[in-house]
Image (tube, rainbow, N blue to C red):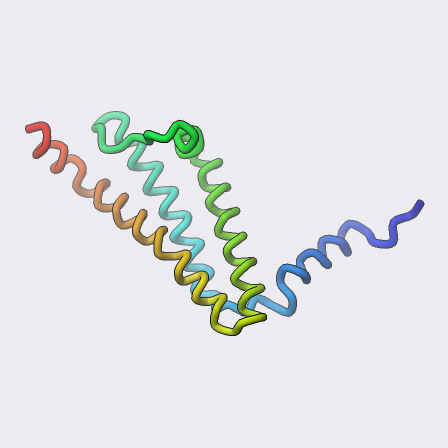
Amino acid sequence: MQCSKTLPSRLESIVRTLFPDEIAIDSEWLLFLTFLVIFDVLSTTLLLWKGAGAGAASEANPFMAFIVYRPLLHLGLKLLFALFTIIVANIMEHNYPGLGLRIVQVACIPYMLAFTVNLFWLMYSDQLLFIVHG
């Protein structure tokens, strides 16, 4: 039995299903979301690495500890989630103009908060730990 479609044509049909005509969402917002994901993983990794000596941070959830202490796994999972968000937002943008962009904008909020908190702790953890521990 011979297949009617080759692998590249199957992949192309999947991509065309996920992205019907073209990416409808502003590319600057997609790039911003991607950078936020990367900076979130980078700042989390630095904070946990710094926490090993200074006690600045540690992961309490054992499942997440398995993930966050492996930076490439952490980055890969976060990027997959961002890709899923972008795909859903793009589909929604074609069906309901304006909604896809809002989905990406709302998805940026937790990453901005996490990056801001991590950056704060990276900058001031030594002073805060000195105040707490005297």
